[in-house]
Length: 231
Image 1 (tube, rainbow, N blue to C red):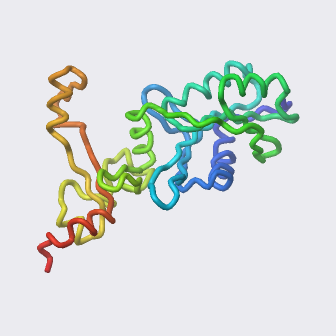
Image 2: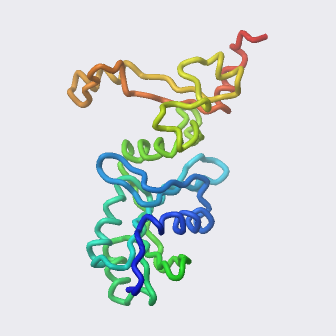
Image 3: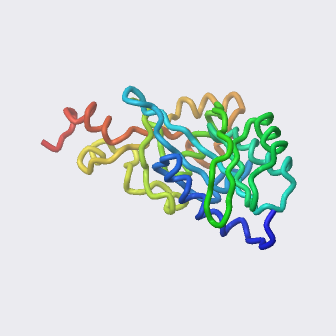
């Protein structure tokens, strides 16, 4: 524990910068989440190799060195519903104790020491399979959509603009415009929406449907360019 206590929010940029470099994340965000909970620092990296567009979602719970270790560890573990790897980053003058490392290993979380504004990975997180629905939603909060054709993830817009709706990186059910402007496309699946509402899985309320799907710019160009009317 350190004598000088600083707010957790001031630590977020430090951890985010380190995460981007250490884990080679191509997309990161701070204080991001859904109604079930917000993640302090979230990152996404490519792990699919040459034959896949798979990504890995990494969650980091940031603490300032004052909270009971088991409590903080449990909070970090809870985010495996969203992410593939979960970490606890804690401010420490000294490293984690042997007992704390054993607790973290038993629970299945990674550990990151924050000391003098620098981060060090002490224990690597195991890999988890998060809930698909929540994982895709949290990725969408990072302005990433999964292509329905190639299964790769691509940027649908700017992260800071997502609350304003879809940005110019995708068109809304307009294939011709997507081809002309070299963009992706988002469309809505009404059949699935009807089925979910019939089974009382999802109430649409005043909305037509929430069942949105994406197609990346590459697949739009490769698979649909010959149907374009622009020539």
